[in-house]
Image (tube, rainbow, N blue to C red; front, side, top):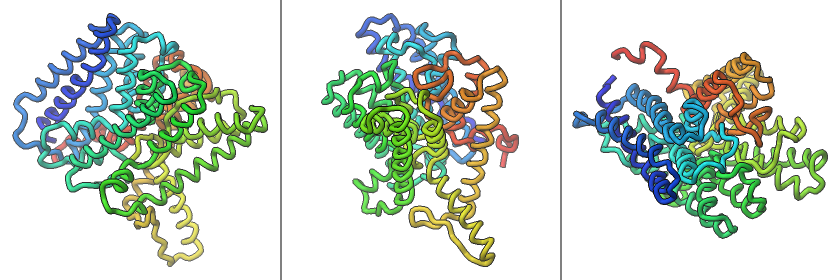
Amino acid sequence: MRFRHVLTLLGALFLVLGALLIIPLIISVLNKDSLLFAFTVPIILAGGIGLILEYNKPEKIVIEKREAVAIVVFGWLFVSLLGALPFHLSGYFNGFLDAFFESVSGFTTTGASVLNDIEALPASLLVWRSMTHWIGGMGIIILALVVLPAINVGARNLYNFESSSIAQEQITPKIKDTARLLWIVYLTLTVAETILLLLCGLSFYDAALTAMATIPTGGFSPRNASIAHYASPSVEAIVVIFMILAGINFSLYLVVFKTNKSIRQFGDVIKFYLVIMFVSTVIVVADLRMHSYDTLMESFRFGAFQVVSINTTTGFVTADYARWLPLSQIILLILMFIGACPGSTTGAIKNSRIIILMKSIYRELIQLIHPRAVTPIRLNNRVIDDKTIKTVLVFICMYLVFFFVASLLMTFSGTDLNTSIYSVATTLGGVGPGLGITGPLNSYAGLSVFNKIVLIACMLLGRLEFYSVFLIFIPKFWKKA
């Protein structure tokens, strides 16, 4: 383990975060909202720690797999801790744990909030809250790759351990160039949605913060009622379109606009993504029309929005689906596990892994009939090797095992089963609102300290996809190879 190299890059992350905190600081000064201290302290702290860790840095930065794992895991942890300071020092949160919960939820684009009255917060604090979403959506490490000094060896390792393990397309020869292009696409989508929302009559504040929560599929709205606050079908339609776009592998946009490569390499996951969304919408809309709403238009408006919001793990709300009948709620629960495409800003298992799981089951059934048959598993016109298949199946097993364990832990403090299951599913999948006392019109404020710690772990493990976090607890990881 090259600790100097790890500390150097962690120091650079602190410096980047400190620089980003200047934005809400300027807003605080302009608005005179008395939060100057809340932003100044973390800026000084981030700058000081960053400079100390950067001191005596090596001439050539080399990042092998072990260093990459350490940087990703500790980078996310420390950035979340530092990002919680403005929340804590503002006085609007009930203790540091709540501030840390909100920060982790922001950076992991979960969207689960402990705030009961979001609109009571000053604009500068809500801007920082939305910024945590926007920074975490594309990934703090991928952001760092754009601005960090040149890494001689290992940029690819950092990229791999932060992004989905089966969505690591390298569009350009250099990872840094790929990261830069991904951020350009990310910014372009954010600006485009902001402009369209402005044309719908939203203020720049509401439009920008909504876009900054949509594209990272986070769901932190500046309004207590989420998207329902605007009561506008046109706003809802624009948000739905951009949630769907954000759920697609971002590399697809680069393939379409920057290279001559075929988009067929994304075909299976895109088709599965759209089909699952369509079928789920049909079922939910039919159920709502029969039992909840008087017209088909109302059923489609609220049902389709919620299906897309949950499927893309965004977590925006336009209706209280806690009042819907079990069929629709179960469909939403299933979507919380599936998620959208790999390489997008969404959470959950990801549909590519679900496809591989389904094809693996089919192959096993075929081989029971024809033991000597050779049945390769293909995804997007490419044969998936057995090592990748094994990794996918192990990941799904870890995901489900941790879901059941975390749900069990939630019940230890007396939390009801409905709340336990849905809150774990939503935080592990990066969705946000659940059911029970963490329903779409409620917050996570009423949970116990223990439950909040469990859900913080769910958010971090879900975002980092288990492997990186579990590796640091293995003694051999820290020993010399």
